[in-house]
Amino acid sequence: MGYIEKYRDLCVENDTISDELFKEYGVNRGLRDINGNGVLTGLTNISKIESFRQENGKRVPCDGRLWYRGYDVIDWVKSIPEDSFGFEKTAYLLLFGKIPEEEEEKEFTDLIAFGRELPTNFTRDVIMKAPGKDIMNSMTRSILTLASYDDYLNSNEVGNVIRQCLNLISVFPMLAAYGYHAYNHYENDGSMYIHRPKPGLSTAENLLLMLRPNQKYTFLEAKVLDVALMLHMEHGGGNNSTFTTRVVTSSGSDTYSSIAAAMSSLKGPKHGGANIKVMEMMNDIREHIHDYSDKEEVRNYLSKILDGEAFDHKGLIYGMGHAVYSLSDPRERVFKSFVEKLSVEKHREADMTLYNNIEVLAPELIAKKRKIYKGVSPNVDFYSGFVYEMLDIPMELYTPIFAIARIVGWSAHRIEEIIGMNKIIRPSYKSVMKEKKLDV
Image (cartoon, rainbow, N blue to C red; front, side, top):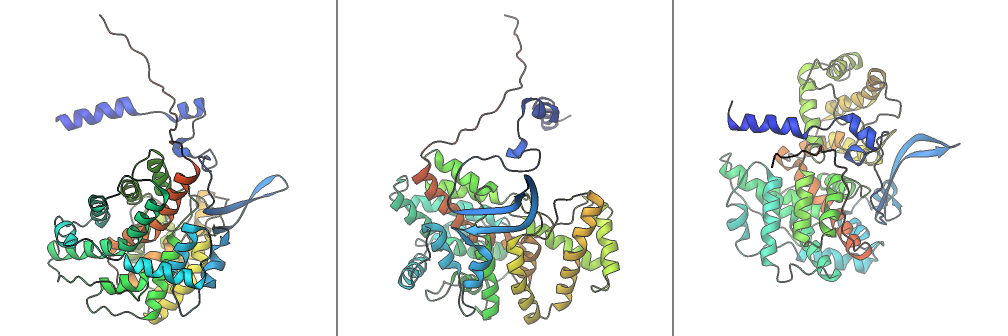
């Protein structure tokens, strides 16, 4: 046995803690109680999630709702005029707690546009220096390197933190797009092109412009991507990467370190990589189903996936269900109409039919086979990967696009943590270690 195998076995032997001990000491594994509800670890005024209601003293599942600064996210997305984009306006709302007036929105949009610039030779010397397939790691390295260019790196004065957050929100699309192009050129022998963002365009438009060789896109393509970014910006404060932001912030660390830590959290497959798993599953389903409109054929193959006989043999239908929501995910509900419009423009109606059939059939099968009665519904990740595929966005960028949106929420929570908490987050762990004596 090699030393690695020996060390691994020692760790498994001495680091395994049984479920019985969690029950004995009343410790919630993963900060989740026995019903899957998150343990309260703080207060926030930024967003709110609802998935259950109290009726006659009982907790009853309900259609999911999500609020940004008090506004229902479905109503918020619908309030954005059809001929415009909402990323910047939504970012203003989340960061500052109010809907911007027309002049305030223009000022903020101009500020984001002005910030879309990296230090001299940064793209060449940092992003292209060590390209790799993991664009999240590339972006995280770039974030920490940007700290070297900040003369006020360690100042946690609120105004300075806002400046730092706005700068990062501005350059995140560049870090993602340029990181991918460097990887695609050096690792895949693809052509290299670095397009500079244009000041008069929205974040969604600039992202498509920077990704595509010809810099062209349709309005609907940019609109659907804009909606996806709005819906991924923030999610209640209790998600893993946002909690990471607040934990690191509470220690007094700087903005770049806090956001880099959140990036490291988001890239985990249990968090930000969910839509990739959905796409892998959908590709497998397409290979094994001949008629996408045949519900019985779709049902039979989904049943095989649930029984662990197909796809990755884990018995999961990815994109179905959510840790918080029960009957429905409000983000999926508002997003689906935009997905349908894009599927028509891209001549992907057959795929849309397949998605619709899975959306209907999968919850029925899961409820029956798993005896889940809280309600199972598609989450936003069920459709987001399909959208990115229709937009010809490479899979390596699916999670980075999530980050381009979620950095707004991280920034809002970092600011709130600094202003409203001012106390280090230091959880307690119950030791179950047995004391041992040495022969001395």
